Image (cartoon, rainbow over all chains, first blue to last red; front, top):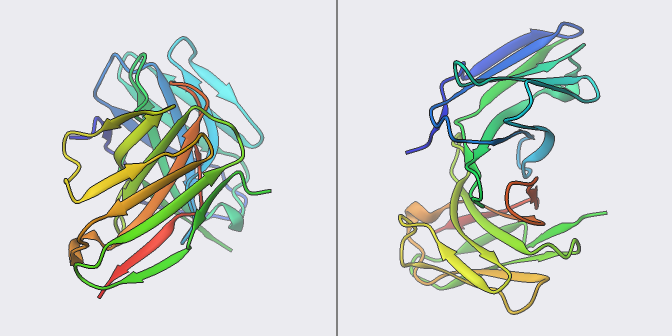
Length: 112
Length: 112
C-alpha cells in the first residue's frame, strides 16, 4: 500500500488567509519529498520539494516543513488566492528509487 | 512551452479494443513514467523506463504494456481495455532518480 497519506481530505480557506496542508508518511527511510498541485483535468504541477537533510524550505508564497521525528510533512501557502484552489498531493521516494509514491490528496477550496 | 506532451487529451475506446496513448518530452530526461489516476484518487505508478530499461510495478496488470523507441517518446498500450481501465493516464519524466518529476497534461480514457 501507499506509505504516504493521512490528511484532511478537504480544506476550505478564506481568500487572503494562510493555508496549511498536512501529510504523514510511514517509511522513515524516505529521503525526498515533493508537493504537487493538480487542477481539475490537468496533470500534477510541481510546487516545492525537500530532502530529508532539511527541515524547511521556502519558495514563492509556499513553505514546506519536514518533521522526521513524527514523519510529518506540511505545505504552507501564504495569502491564499482563488488560483490556489486545487488538489494537493505529497509524494515521497526512497533512497536510490525512481518511484514517487503519492498520498491521497487534499482538496483546497478558496472562498472569496 | 509544454515539456511533456501527451496525445490525445481525450480518448474514447470500445471495450476490448486495443488503444495506444502517446507521450513525448523535450527535456531529454532519462526517466519516463506512466501513472494511472482514477477519479478522486492519487496517481498510481504503472511502470517506468530508465533509458531503455523497463521496470514494471508488481501490481500492474498484464493488459498494460509500454514501449520507448527513443529518449523522446514513450507509449502506453492497453491490449484489451475494460470498463475499469477508464482513468486519467499521466506521463512524467525526470532527469535521474530522486529528482522532480515533470508531468504531462494527461489523457482521459473513456471505455464504452
